Image: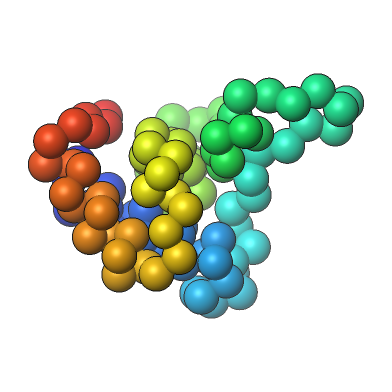
Length: 100
């Protein structure tokens, strides 16, 4: 996991815990299903991926960041402290996660 990916996931983690600016806090939504069926992405706590039509939108933090965050192991997402979260990602990144 690259430093840029860890930094992006840290920003998302702050936003999900409402420790960031209101813009970032409201940018990311957890995956949910409206028809009553529980999906794997809902159980894992994945972020909802926005649909894009242009390739240049893929670099947007809302899209790129959600993809990075969804690749993180579930046990790392449950950490409340952002500092501990980033530290855990750094440790995990050295050994197992390969994003991109």
